Image 1 (cartoon, one colour):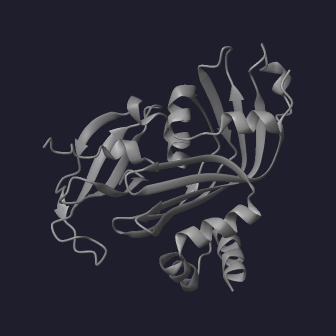
Image 2: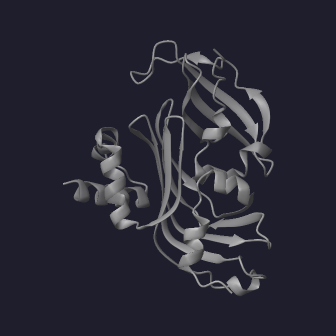
Length: 85
Length: 168
């Protein structure tokens, strides 16, 4: 049985953020934030879920952050574009 | 009860002043019932997509031909539409994870045959459920060009939108 590939968080960027930051396919990955990923302790998180904080350059040249959950089964959740901090 | 609470939420979101009961409402509401109620207030379905456990929708209260659309129309099959009072909703695994309001959204085909669309927003406000909790942010006025194929894959209802405005 072929294993399911892990979901790509960029496929889950909200439409309003696509309008703000352009096509995610045109974003440049700049790397994870120091310390990322970390184990999620949220009551909503399945045990073993990791929180990822990644830096991208959007289509217009601005640095943004993408924060998301990566669940043990390879799925992602709460993929959100956040301001660079 | 839902209508009154929803109206309060939308008003608070517009002003950027959300109350504790707004978050409690979003965390407890049945998403299907919320969508049903929102479709009453925002009857135009602009975009809808399900991917994995995510369900995302773009709704609008009203629409009219883009005021300067004649500059953009070339051949048949092109269109320019102004969408009034847009709401974008994101739901994951039966939980609301994002809601935004944008008073104006313009959608204009760039070429003919259509390969690219120009989306212009007058800005707005967004509430996100990030991995670290709720976060409010401003959406800036912005223009972006996106491939029609990408938008169609994301569930944009161009055929339906084209019928809402007269096409030259």
